[in-house]
Amino acid sequence: MSKLKRIDHIGIAVKDLLKSLKPYQELLGLPLNGIETVEFGGATLSVAFLPLRETEVELLHTTGTTGLVAEHIAKHGEGINHIAFEVDDIDSYYQELKSKGTKFITDGVVPGSRNTRVLFFDPGEFNGIYIELIEMPKKK
Image (tube, rainbow, N blue to C red; front, side, top):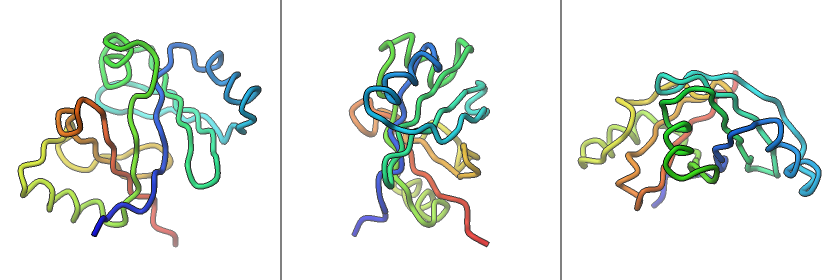
């Protein structure tokens, strides 16, 4: 049985965050739910959240030349960077997957945007596609 709850978001790498927001807002009518700056993999990212029911479109921008987003844009240009699946207990899932020899791009679970905890598989596990697992913050 799958431990995945839902698709949380689809991450899209963009060169110009403000310009890229326009068609999502004006043509698709998606509201902007905020922009957050986050450190990930040695790079600073600007992340815009555009919710659609229980899933979000996440636009990712960096001014850096290294890291997940910069490397994606350099190799593939702008476009879908990753798909994120929500899970309840990311630590136990990580341990289970690691014991099976699964490869990841991070050494364990790391902080993500919106006070989440995340884990990225090595893209070689999924035909070159980045897959992210995300655990939402626990409600108090």
